[in-house]
Length: 305
Length: 294
Image (cartoon, rainbow over all chains, first blue to last red; front, side, top):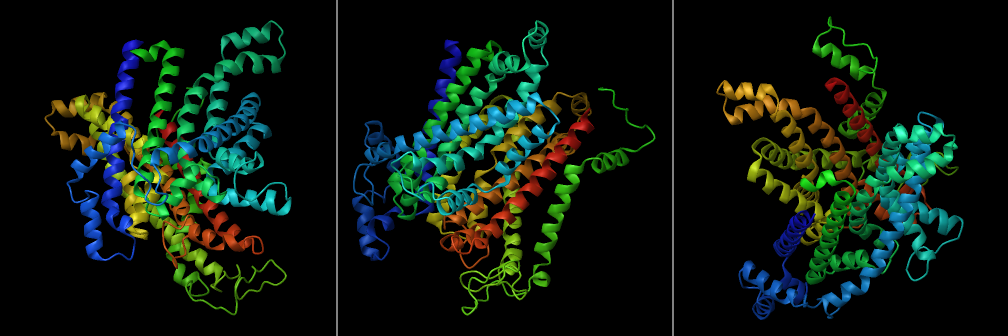
């Protein structure tokens, strides 16, 4: 188990390191950071001066190593727009996005548990077909369009919820639904499939044979075992949700990492975007590492891989 | 195996395939719907009642025909600049389909090459490809795409290239595992023993056998690329105005949605129907593949 862990941990570190190179190079190749610092209307001479002062005339590899050196000591540079340290800015917004990611994940799991279990308990009935339609709608609807529909319903027609902003729990309701519904179909299919498999197993038949009611067998015995693969998927999907929150946070003007990323992109704030990309990648890597470990812990056969 | 009647030996391989396709309603509906949308996109100049770019400031925000104030001059109404919405919708199908098709060509080439190489050669090639896929998966696609498209400058070509260069991961993953399975089969060993070159074995023995899986992944990826383009354009950092991208149409109309709901409902529904058609066709194809492998 320790060997397995060390191997996975080493791989995770290597991936994070590679992502930091990609994020650094990609942004500098696709845009000119000197123009971003000097301002759009700057003279050529000013841009050249900025390039010299900020060391942007050095080879990309040298610039990266300089960035990496200070990054390892906790200094990720300053935001070009806010003029404050990037690290503080990003860590300030991270909790909001993590909270939204977790509420969205919870929403997706609740929806998927209810409809996935029902679909498995009554396969090929109207309940099964209803769950399938809920999953299909979640899959085909663009999430930004779904978010606008939610605003029309809950803010404009019913006047229950605020259109945008953050601060109270009411502000989180629509973003949670919009973001969570997007990943619910994956969980629903997985829960339905693994539930059907579990329900066909011997110990379920035994439980039924000794006279336990059907709902108790499903709720107590089957669900616990059907949830094993769901835990691993949840870790991966949470990473995915954090990346996807840029669209939803922007629509609802939520003061999190995704909205900060959007604003930084429109303001060409290179240092901030770079750190947000790196941050989301590292979170994803950590989550997949966790999911690997959970899987290995639950199923010893994986550990040899 | 589950009591189903075995294949009729009198039928050729092709007839059996046709029979499986005909008995798969989800493929037929999905493929039919998709074919219809493709036909509309190709015939756009003939079908569109107006020029999709022509503005008429006297006829702004006209409602569609099913509203009391609607008329058949503009069946789906007009947008905030008085452009005919039906014509924009029809031309918009071209953009979504072009995005879907071009992105899967680029990402499919990259991913298939990587997956085939990893699955066929194994060893350090496999290690490198697996590492690249892991790294790519950890990058938040939408964020990286947004940033790169915004910095280079949004245009249809840039969006296609950026998405194509980002979305090869699933091709690589699926091609790697299916190639591994095919690699261990006897006819590959036979081809090797007969002295066929590696390139020849990959192209004429491995590729035809992994092709069904490739097509299924391609449908999934096309749908996801279309949704990504729509999201990028919705955020104003994808395809630029005045192109009638469906995502951009929703973005331009969102300030008017409280009074003119159809302005977001129509392109949003169009996107959902297109994605539904592609997914349905893809699911059907997967079922057809699965039964043919039994």
